[in-house]
Image (tube, rainbow, N blue to C red):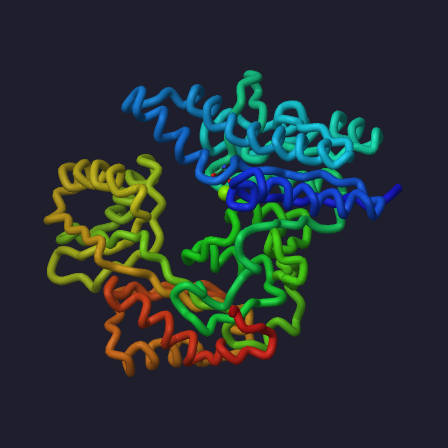
Length: 414
Ligand code: ASP
Ligand code: MG
């Protein structure tokens, strides 16, 4: 059978009629080469944000089932317009919602997981020679209701479909050329990374790089689906391949630098120094669905410790509510929080086999008078919490210290 390709176009790539036409031409070009083409489409432009905003203007607290119904309409606009554009060029196309495409999800509204894909209808349409456009970001739950897959969830739809349909890889078309050594808006000499491992991409996404939805990378890793991220409208854009790790990737010490300015630092003073206190604190935060990132517990002074940690800005309110309970129950001291922090991270599988990355990172920050407030590491990532005002500078000097502006593997961003 002929090759099957899964292409995904994000909201910015279908933001207006002209862009939809150009994106459709890309799908048509693949079809004319004899490929079977499945296109995952996002809601055009900022439509998802606008729909959420609309719901909040009708009610301060919209019902989660209805909010999913509403949000899912954005992608329906995208798929139908895309199919209309293909048909207008004389190429057969059929749009399918997530439920029509057989995307089955769990019941968790607004952050559902895909549990299974039954792509019968997709195959029928492909057999007819049609381009099939599939709504990203949505699935059918066990109660036959529509659920959505979390913000940026069209990436997940695309990767999961590529896995289920046995595509050789998944093509993600977007408004940037791929994955860079750092955000080129903040670091002008950032380079495009031609090839990066799933794990590095996951760490970069978790560290604040906003290229793809993290869950989509996890699924790509699990099913070993290579992903190519490239510019939707520049046919010469080499893009970035996100692939299984190979040993040559360890040659570089560091692959990328990321900055996350959406973290809040919280400190609980005078937590009694006895077993079970940290367990209680983080249990309560967990139950309140607060995603804790870095944690530091200082050495005990007398009968108590200070515990500091970071949480995403979005979880701020939940965290504060949970911590008031913590304070009452555990009789801790004051709770302090600040938004004036940033997390700067360096990521690279090279850290597994090279030593000295942490030392070079801390020395570089010191030489540039950047004070480190917290440190966290994984096997392939080192993150530091610094003052928010120092964040961009920290990123730029680390990018330079690890020679990323002249990486052999890269191309200039501009
Ligand atoms: N339209 C959804 C969002 O804005 C899904 C996506 O774009 O991937 O989050
Ligand atoms: Mg999007």
